[in-house]
Length: 180
Figure 1 (cartoon, helix red, strand yellow):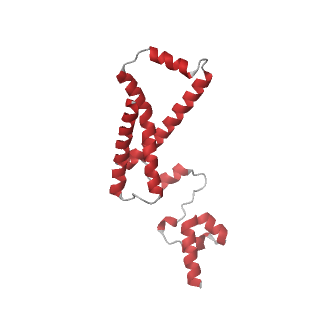
Figure 2 (cartoon, rainbow, N blue to C red):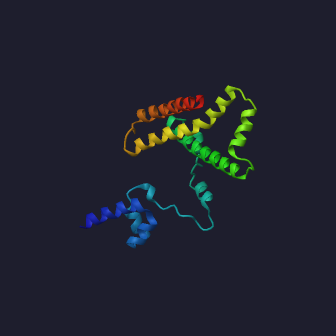
Figure 3 (spheres, rainbow, N blue to C red):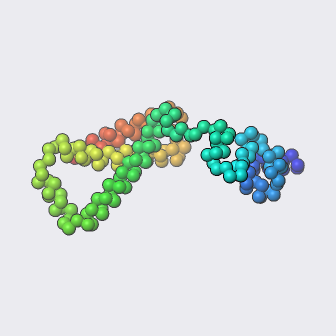
């Protein structure tokens, strides 16, 4: 029984951390340190008057390099693009809705003004494409996320392949919608 209790205490320490572990089991810091199973569980306490940055300097910890050290991968680009397209669509739709509410005329009035400017077909196609691609990418990548929610496609090769496939499908769908 004592062996089971010690194993359970060690596992709880790893899951919940030192503070919660000490409070729930009411252990002394020495007992909590003894139950730790890894070197990362050592308490690096702040000394009097020391802040986070001073402690990291004292312990010779490097600053986090953030994105500069990572090799760009399809999954990274897809994730960033998914977030960016979501924000772009939200901003465009909100701006359009607020603009239509604040302008004195109705939507057909402003559509007639744009039609009277006689923009070329290429310019209209590019504008339609710029508006439809974020939606199509977000839509296709959302379907990919639904497949991930079902536990499908987590192998490295599948993740990279589906990332490129999502971009290709989004581009094809955006071109189809833009030609209409």
